Image (cartoon, rainbow, N blue to C red; front, side, top):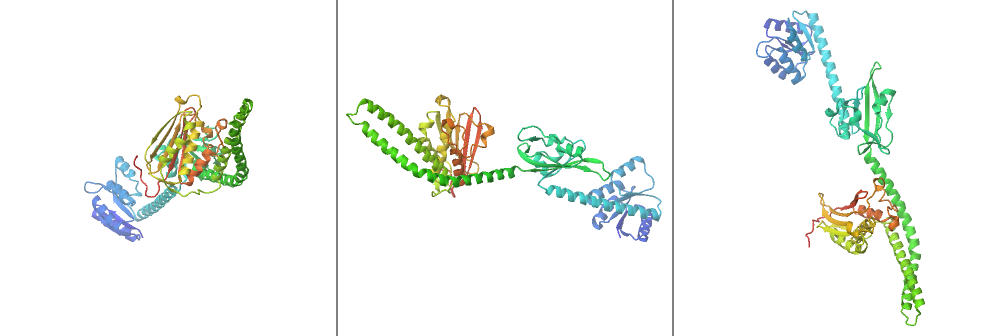
Length: 502
């Protein structure tokens, strides 16, 4: 049976209560005469219920003691009262008592009051436990859970929703759902109708259209109406999931599949092209050598010499074209096989200096070329591959700049270490920039923004492939009309530290 603590400062009344409780089958945990004694007894004996006289001797009355017991131990309290003014009763009600027993009482009233109080306490405990379990459950879910009232104002958000919305639950409570979760269609950038409102209007679960975005995140969402036991509409609940990372992984896998297919194709095509191309290049070189020697013949008529000069220029152009084809097939074969070179500790700044020298003819004809090559950690790489990446980026920068104002444009190259200790290289240009709608496509093989300037569309794809195989990252920032910045980051070689300037 439940243990009951009696708090009564009149000894006869307390004794009478004790006898009555024992006759009814209850255990008496103890008797206290003051608020302080009640708190001490409750702390040591932990009764199931407290019978508390409102009027007690001492500085604190029964109401103060009841509030303290509720806050400290959650023990239900039944107040005993003979008479009390309205103000006292209002104070007592604010402590949320389990019941009242009016003096003088009879055993039947005592029993019914205690049983109702114990039942109510048990139900409240179950409710609190259920709420606590539900809060723990919702807090453990990574997905965002948001509840709204019938006017679409937020009434609840779990931690997942706080993370997704970037707003604390207390700040969001009472605000319109559309303000807390501003949803837009990715393709049109137009707001999406409130899914909670639709779920309540249609009295069914609804889903967001594919490609729904919350700020920078792609999300999936379902909204369902909350309907009471009597059929009344109480609000709606939304469950949202950030699918941005899944989308990114799917795109990476698709890209990887495309590159694998391209690699297999490139391996075969490169072989088929290079074999006959070798004969073409060799014959062109031989023809050029013979024609140039013939042009030096003293007795050769002037008209014939002029025709030979035209042929030499045409064959030289053809030779340059074969060299370009050979370079493209070499780049394509990068996709077909892993890095074959031995990877050694490599100085990115030295590679940058070399790349600046070999591209000087093309870059300096279009812009002022500047450099700030700070020491960086050595990276585990191949000098040839790093040089290939940098040459591609520099040529790409030059081709993005019109050739009519070299003094007004700039190509700037810099190296440094980032906060992770990685080596970083940037190539910055003041060229035409890249429109946002095609920025995600520039690393795709054969996609070129400048085919009229000789771009094959393979350089950036090759560069990204090399950098990623070395465990690095390549990023771009660009604004149409203002230029672009390409940044390559590579992890340091084991035991490497930034090198001192020479």
